[in-house]
Amino acid sequence: MAKTTEKITMKLSQKREGEHIFWKSRQWNNDLPSYFVLSNYPANEQLVSNDLTGMLIQNAIFKLGGGSVTVGNLFSKSVGKASEKILREAYTDNSMDELITTALKNDYIIIAIGSLTDKSEIARFRLRTFLERLFDQEANDRIQVLVAQDTKEPAHPLSRFVRGFGLNWQLESVDSVGLYERIIKQMSSAKIRIHLPID
Image (cartoon, rainbow, N blue to C red; front, side):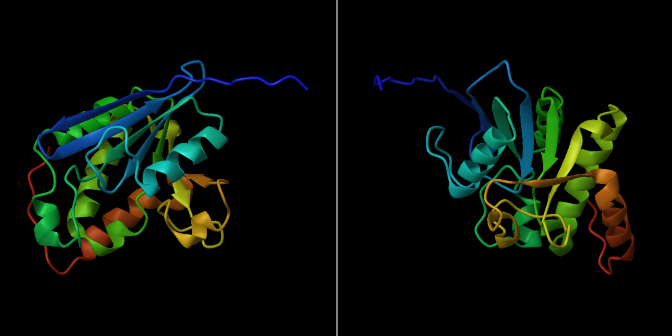
């Protein structure tokens, strides 16, 4: 059998403002569908270097038949241990505009933030705003949620309930997961109200 050398050109890009990173993009085939994956926050600032979450996302999108993936950050600043105080300062005034504009340029939009909204009122506010603005653009049918294969609960790429099934992501529609309704219910029942400006 003859030896062959396979080559591929990957285009890397990211949008940032100082220490805030709005998204990172990797494109390997512009003839295939493009994906926008919403994650929690950036793990590193280097364009070429990819953290474990980023690698898992890229490999899963490749397995889905995608030709590019843009990983957007619900919070644009890297954080250590997330708290309401830290998350309150972890995004810029224009970050939501950047997320929406970039997400709408893609064929598919995947929510992959796991249970962060169960723990954080600010995260719920941010995700609610993200979803409502996509709904306003009639992008509902392009949005999917990464879920755990056994419980169908929203999941993060690092979750053992996702990684345990390799690169076979289980994706469900926002409606079938009831994600938006869940956020509204959590926000209305919160004991402490957090007043935040809308992006």
